[in-house]
Structure formats: C-alpha cells, structure tokens
Length: 176
Length: 176
DNA sequence: TTCTCAATCTGCAATCCATGCGAATTAGCA
DNA sequence: TGCTAATTCGCATGGATTGCAGATTGAGAA
Image (cartoon, rainbow over all chains, first blue to last red; front, side):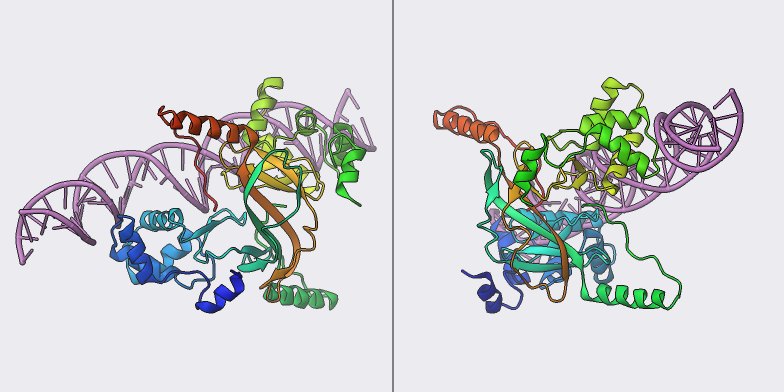
C-alpha cells in the first residue's frame, strides 16, 4: 500500500488514537493509568518529534507531579509495541515519533526542527559493500535548512552586507 | 567522480596518511604532538568505526598515560577539518570513521558491527514532504545482521529444533 | 462492592558519554 | 636557547537515560 494513500485515509498517517492505544495496552496485559492516557493524548497527532523532556514539560502542565521516569517508561512501552518510533538526529536526546508509516526525517541544522519525509524507493536502494550483511531496515536522515532559518540567514546576510553586526547562530551540530 | 574508482586509487578510500594529516594540521596552525601522531596512525585505514573509548584503549597500550580527553580533542579536531566523519548508530557512543568518501553505514543489530556501504544514487533521492526545507546532506543507516551473527542465529535455531536450551542473544537495540 | 496482588508510579541514585576548566607541559618559531 | 601560545591531562560537571525500592493503584476475582 502506498503510504501517501494511507496518510490520506486517516488524519495523522498511521497513528492509533488514544482509545486504540488503550485497547492495545490492555491486550498486551499492561494497565491503563491516567499518566499513560495523558501521554497517549499528547502523542496523538504530534508532529514535532518531541524529546522525553519536552513531553514531560507538556505532561506536567496537565498533570503536575507526573514523573519524568514515567514518561520514559511509557514511551519505551509504546515503542516496544511498535506504536512509536525512536529517532536520533544527533542532537543528544532521543526524539519520539508517533507516525509509524514507512518514512524518514529531515532535520534543520540551524534550529533542530525535525520533519517527516517520504522517500520513493527507499526500500529498494542499491547497496554496494554489504559483504554478506542482511539488511532489514534503512533509515535516512536528511539535514538541511528549514524555511524559517533560511529566511533568517538571508536577513542576516543582507544586514551584514549593510555593515551591521553579525549575530552568531546555530546550536552545536555534531554528526557530519 | 565515482567513489569506487576513488577507492581503487588508494588503499583505504579517501583517507589521508599520518604524514598528510601532519601537514594538514600544521597548515591549519595546529601543533603536531606525539599523541596526535599516534592517533593519526591508529585511525589510518581503520575500518572498525571505533568509539573514543575504544581508541583510547588502543592508544593507551602504545602510550600509557595518554588522556581520554586528548583522544576526544584530537578526534574533534580531525572531524572539524573534514578528515574524519562522526557517526551515530544509536548505540550510545559516537563512532569515528576515517573514510571521507560519500558513503553510508550498515550496523548489525546483534553484535553492533558497523560497515561502510556505498549507495547508488543516494544524492538524488526523490523526497516528498520537504515543505520548503533545503536538503544539504543525506545519511543512510541500514540495520540488519552480519554474516557471523546470522550463522550464530542459525546454529541456535537448529539447536532449539533439537530441543536444546535457547540462549538469549542481542545487546540492547534502541532506534527503530 | 470489596479484596487482592501484580503492575505501575515516583524520586533518587547511578551510569554513560562528552565537554569545560585550569595548571603544568611542550611544539615550533625567532 | 628562549619565548609563548597551543596542548595535555585530570578532575569536575552536565545531559540523557536507566536501576532500584517503597508507596500506590488498576482491574480481575470473590
């Protein structure tokens, strides 16, 4: 099935609703707690690829006292059930993606924003040098500049052309 | 230029010799210390994608007293000069790759071995959903099973078919 | 509804990886 | 040979994540 068609079929790609996740948890013998339900809701349709800390901050607003440990636990549970993908864009903290479609990511090297992308034929790449390795999966991480940061850079370079002071941008960027 | 041709031209792909790195360091106004020379040598032609700790262990054998801090420092310097690539296979520690060809990686999800692979057309992937993002770079991480681990799994499953006890395999594996 | 107990939650300690810092040392040039 | 900025090293620090143990609670059984 084409993933873009599948995306069209639901609002948020292949993402289970909180109610469906509740069922899935029970079906797997896990209990459904208020903390978990809150997190199901916060992840549903979430396209920002939050870190555990970010999600914890959001969760804390609605449920003061919830533990960061519980956030990690629940995200890990979701991931091991295949309802969530863990992604690493090289910024230190793991990011969580409720979209379970076959997709990949772009990260803005300036602001760190992460976005889902779909790559045609990514499951049929011609790979040389495998030397016996059996490939089960490919994940592609693109890096580049988002529109907002591109505009910002453009603004700054115009300013510098006018002789104004140049502000340093960019957080640390590590992976080549 | 085709990277495979380029690989044929030198023994280890696009990898500078310790002597060349020495020149490069001096040209960049950096000093060449015995510690750095040792690390140049250890990285030259190194295809195992070592972590900083692993390299530190090797370096310590030949130069007792060398500091882990210095290993990190030198690797970082090499990377910022483009003589080394930092890679993250999701196992926690950053790995270092002296091959600066345009290539990608496969990681064995069982033993963690990392190998270089070349992907035809990886710079011309058809990407949907960029939404204004300008892509500067793509890195592809394949995961799968190396030949040694595949053989091991096969052996274990034969044993289990014979009713023998099944040993658990695999270290933790995190990224989906 | 109440009981029961394993699953869960929470907070804190511990771990792993990586970097900041400052005093002592040293490469490389004059 | 001497100078000086770069480098080394060890220790402390910081961020992300997990281990642990006692208190709490979901959800099936009575």
